[in-house]
Length: 88
Ligand code: C2E
Ligand code: C2E
Ligand code: C2E
Image 1 (tube, helix red, strand yellow):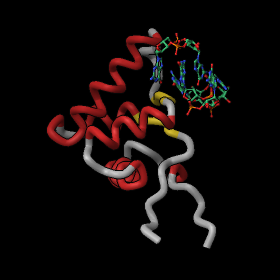
Image 2 (cartoon, helix red, strand yellow):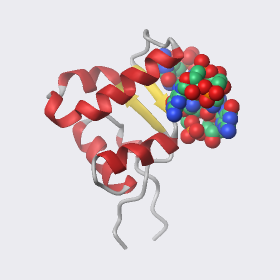
Image 3 (spheres, rainbow, N blue to C red):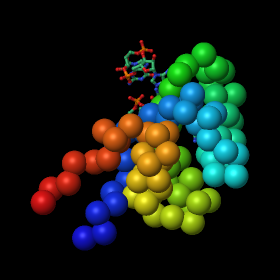
């Protein structure tokens, strides 16, 4: 087993995202900003996005959705609870 499963609930920590260098989080930061704009949702500390959006972002980052989930947890953009429970 590869171990890396995609996040079940994608709740992005916007404050943490702003602290990270643009060369790392640029595409994700632009994606989140676009969703905030589409929703008119600018006041939150976190932003819930679609699982489907995580799949699109994984393509942009050239990772599997599970690998991107691990990367985002590593950066502190997703909480460790985003890591799905393993059945093993
Ligand atoms: P939750 O999903 O656990 O979210 C907890 C809190 O995180 C929310 O409190 C809100 O302050 C923040 N939050 C989460 N996602 C976003 C986001 O995309 N944008 C912003 N600006 N803040 C976000 P809040 O708003 O008092 O909501 C409390 C609970 O009410 C939520 O807990 C959820 O269970 C429910 N809820 C609120 N809005 C929705 C919604 O659009 N859909 C569904 N299904 N439940 C919602
Ligand atoms: P849309 O996809 O046609 O969705 C229209 C409205 O349906 C949304 O208005 C929202 O009120 C509701 N809606 C759709 N899917 C969900 C969902 O999974 N959870 C909740 N709580 N509500 C949902 P809203 O929020 O004003 O968004 C307007 C448009 O902005 C959306 O139209 C969509 O085109 C885009 N958008 C907003 N947030 C996202 C996102 O997280 N991912 C993507 N791919 N598009 C988004
Ligand atoms: P949520 O609102 O609690 O919705 C949980 C799941 O229910 C969504 O997971 C989606 O599978 C389904 N769902 C809810 N509303 C709709 C809808 O109007 N149309 C369809 N086709 N499915 C719906 P998903 O897509 O992974 O989204 C996760 C969370 O991201 C949502 O939790 C909500 O907090 C946020 N979200 C996603 N899309 C939108 C949107 O367009 N507008 C807003 N305001 N929030 C959204």
